[in-house]
Amino acid sequence: MVLNPQRYLTQLATFLNVPVKNIKVNETLICTCTVGNNTVKGIINIIISLLMESKSSLWSTDPLEKAEIQQWLEYGIVYAVHIDESQNLKGILSDLNDILAIKTYLVSYKLTVADVLLYYILLNAVASMSYLDKQKYMNVSRWFDNLQQESCVRQNNQIVDFSTNYLTSSTQSKY
Amino acid sequence: MAAGTLYTYPDNFRAAKALIAAQYAKANVKVAPNFVFGETNKSKEFLKKFPGGKVPAFESNDGKYLQDSNAIAYFVANEQLRGRNEYDTAQILQWIGFAEGEVLPAACAWVFPVLGIIKNSAGAQEAFQRAKDDLRVALTVLNSHLLTHTYLVGERITLADIVMACNLLNPYKYTLEPDYRKPFANVNRWFTTLINQPEVKAVLGDVVLCSAALSAPPQEGKGKKKEEKKEKKQPQPKKETPKKEKEPEEELDAADAALAAEPKSRDPFDLMPKGTFNMDDFKRCYSNEDESKSIPYFWEKFDPENYSIWYGEYKYPEELSKVFMSCNLITGMFQRLDKMRKHAFASVCLFGEDNNSTISGIWVWRGQDLAFPLSPDWQIDYESYNWKKLDPNTDETKKLVGDYFSWTGTDKDGRKFNQGKIFK
Image 1 (cartoon, rainbow over the protein chains, first blue to last red):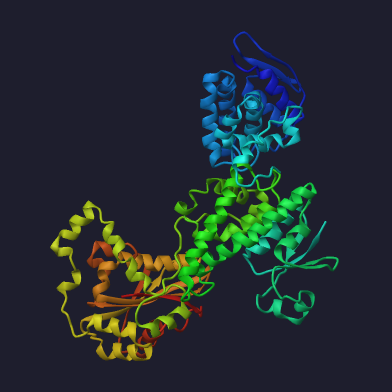
Image 2 (image 1 turned 120 degrees about the vertical axis):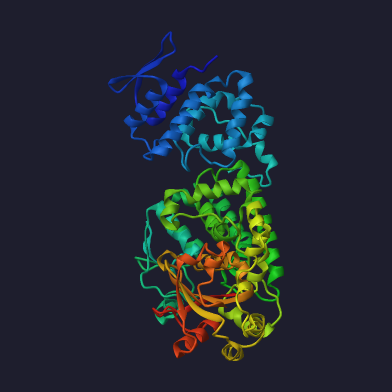
């Protein structure tokens, strides 16, 4: 099973405040949709045209950062979308956990579209994680918790509870 | 929104808190121009407004006065930085208390002796070690908090983060070497995230994390009288140089070892006539006696037939920035010239201050020609210097030698003596 791009693309478009129509996946698995007046093909192209349309700060002006963001978008739609298959879950989480051990956000030192897209893709998987796993992939949990506190990122999604994690840390207060 | 003037000396990590908070709140806070530390803040006018006479101090455009960096930062901040509710604000105060009470004293006790801001006194070693341990305890607490929290309070950057990061700024820049900070991965992540925020960068510029810890000047050795006197002049006594002497030898790789084994390259000075000047005796005299004795001793024993005096000046003074980096340049050169030590002596001095300094020195060695071409080991640094042979019979030379050996005087543009290093 692969996650249907329709859901996370719609959420991303809502977050960016850009109207999209007609998100379709054809029989050769090519995704198309209408952004503004144009029909755009391919998920990464769609995301980038959404960003252009919204003039969002989630994109970057720095070429290196742009490349890194695209790399993460690709990781998101090629690997992370398979997270609903249990044999992939562990690999994806531990990849992310290692990277987030030394980073607050995936790219650079600020929130970018890479973080937001991954949040939408991982949403269901993280919500159904056991407390033990949340603790095991603590860096992912911390990153995810930081994202979901931003109400415009979270939208109507449920807040995932990480409170038991905090029992293990020396300071027990949450927020 | 708060607008006003901040009184501070440049590069003050306390003032940075207020300036960063102002960046976030887009508050119009200007740094008072022409502030002279020790003068402006001791003036009657200043003390009238700020009885403590301490900086940073803040004067708002509508005539409100504040002292203490954290209070000023709170005043010029916005709602996000102050906390969105009472509980957030209380937690921010809690972390500010931690930053001031647990982190800062240890940080200062460690960093100040290293930077030479306070003198390394008899009890300092113990205090130094205690500071290292105390800071480790504080960082452990921070580290476990930041494992589960992206920022200190409420998942957003707040005053707590700004104050904590500023209090940790100097340790991260000067003393938290990679090995020491390795266990604190979460603190490192949080700190690098903060210093790379545009609002923080606008105040602090690019912060480079410490790559090798600077150590505080050691505090022992014989010739006590000399030692004490030197200590006042420079934070890093010359005893440090011999200590490091052994390092390059250990690092010899196979090729160097083979070179060293060749009898020819053992000591190029051996081929020259010995002369009457006994280098070891002079060095002993210089180390143990006052310059008022050792300089006349030098002229009495100096053998112009077989020894020569040289003036060496660093060619690229415009590239010199921080004083401690320039000092490392000098001691590094001394280390690479290790094998020359036996038959050479030098006093190399740094004049001026950060970003406006020169390096020059007086060298004495066996032989009449430039010694560096004699061995491939000695050729790394010398081309960065202009070399001038001095005539030992002129009064000019006598004065130069006197100035450099006793670490007095100025460079040719009048910059004041800052630090000296002795090659012996």
